[in-house]
Amino acid sequence: MTKYGYPLLARIIYRHLNIILTPLLLAYAIIALGGVFHDSKYWLPLIVTVLFLLFFIRYYFRMYKYFPFEIVVDEEKMICTNFMNKRKKVEIKFSEIKKIDGGVFSGNAALPLYITDGKNVIGVTPHLINYNAFVTTMLSKIDRELYSQLLQHIQKLGEVAQSKKLKRNKKARKKRA
Image 1: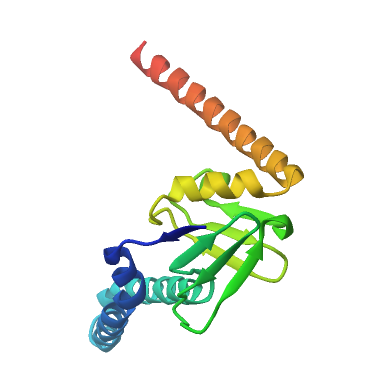
Image 2 (image 1 turned 45 degrees about the vertical axis):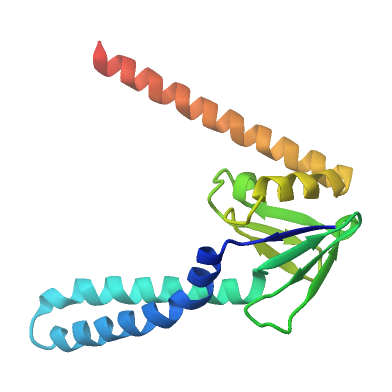
């Protein structure tokens, strides 16, 4: 059994940053709303603040719902505990995993990885201690058909990235000439 978790700073940021940021953004939005009645230049700060607030609240609720702070992996399943809702516990068998999205499988390694087994969705951010070992272990235990689909998808992403790189290089050569 291997145990994966997040560093202390990441846990503090993921769990408690909303307690500080939400009231600050709300206060700023209220101030900008009050300023709109005096001068129209306050529309832009109001819109930007509201968009940040909506994005932040959406991100926090996604963290609350999908992201465990402790994952225990054995030979046939992973047990996810210590969600923001402390009573929640999710057990996913590797043989039942239907879909893996995000992260390196979306072309951006900084995005969270979402693991779906049909009933549950689990999110894992790259800040997980030994994240690469976790992904490697999970990929070695999932169904071979899903593994081959993921491998083909990553190869397609690599080909697209390579073609974009070639196009960029051609444009750079034309500008130099």
